[in-house]
Image 1: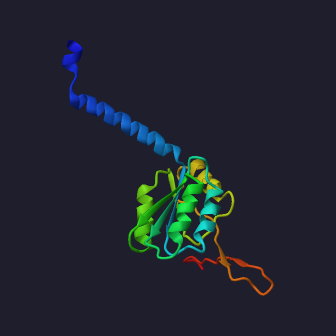
Image 2: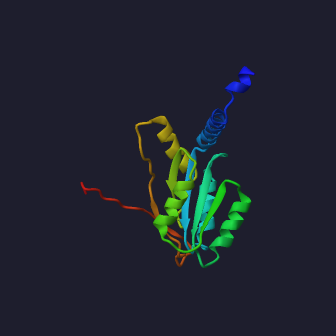
Image 3: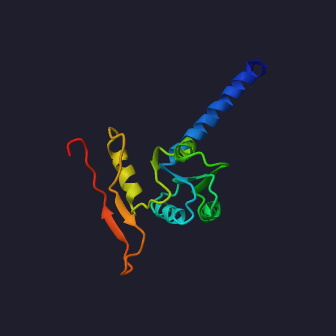
Length: 174
C-alpha cells in the first residue's frame, strides 16, 4: 500500500520522459557527422555528390539531402540514393524556397555532433570527413574546420580531360 500511495502519474511521466531524453541523447551522440546537402534541380550532379560523401561516412553518420522543390529528375535520384543507403535521408520541400531555407531545414534535422554543409554540385575527397572531425575531436578549442577547395570545370577539354584548379583565397592581409 505504501508503494501504491507513493505512485503518481506525474512521477511516472517524469520517469518516462527522462528515459526518452536519455535514449535520444545516446542516439544523437552516436551520430558523429551529419552532412546537409540542399538540392534544387541538381539531377546531373547530386548522385556524384552523395557518393563522395557516403564514401567518407562512418556507419552511424548521416547525409540529409533537402530537395528544395526541384522540377527536374532530382527527386527520383534522391529516392534511389536513399534506397541504396539507409544513412541517406531525404527531406522534400513542396516548393522552391531557396538554398538558405533548405539548408536550415537540413540543419534542424541533423543529429550529428558535427554538421557539414555540402552543395549538390560539390564532391568530397576520400577521408575528408575523418580528417575534419578528427581535428575537432582532437582539440576541443577548435570551433570550425574546413578543407581546401578545388574548382572543377566539368566540361571536357578537347583531349577529354577535366580541369581542376586549387581555389585562390585572399584575406584582409592580401
